[in-house]
Length: 366
Image (cartoon, rainbow, N blue to C red; front, side, top):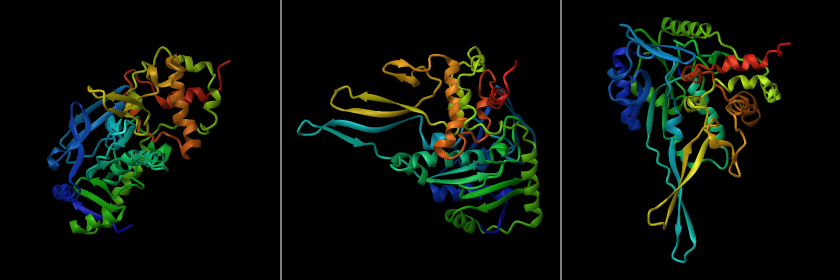
């Protein structure tokens, strides 16, 4: 990896200008509607300067002070998922050819170059999981086009929320891989690292000075402090053990608490369950096939021959938790949880994935 460079805070606009010049659009975080969300930005002044977050089970609040930092928060509800797997997207269209035979035409992948500023380590880990699923052969061509169009500027996390546990899952708070550039924010600017040839090229065009030893040490101290600030831990040995508890009576305790609203799966950066829908043309000569986000908490997600396999909410929560923390390991070589804590903060009744897994793994009471 090339020697870290230093981007003075007053030159942040230069970075955004360069990202837009080389990659078309720049998506970045803004404080909007009471949360940190990602949308297209053009000016550094649009970033959430001075904003912080306070998160807990079923709770998310933004607070502001006079500080200069624009990335002093953990994460908001959004991640890279909507950019790679849109909530709804066409898959193919079917019609009839001149001989009356059915003719299928794949939807063209619509991917424009896009730079994303401020990607957190947990979301880069989730991106790696998406790659393992959608790029395995036969690769999803729409996903691959969107993935190849991304230029990612990671942001090491220095302000984890109380709901975060990426240090426990091994996915943060430092960005480890998958980025083109990675930044660590200090009060007066950013320590910049390149993680790809494209990143090295862009860093070279910025003509930045080398980061000093003091700046690198300050960044390292903040990494360690962010790691030490996280206290949540998943129980060890979940793979194989959690699924073995599938018939445990304690799952029923979730029946009266979980609303099956699907918020947890919507904000989860690794959940990608979807359903399919036909949209016939009014003239009935063609029909488009669409893919839409779905959730294992939805009534229809477990339909088999028109009847749901998982009729109770507790069954759906069991499906989600055992898949996420246990059977993903056999499928993808690792847990499906990256420790972002979004499912905890954005659950309207404050159900805590870590607490639920811990309770289930405890010996049953006599």
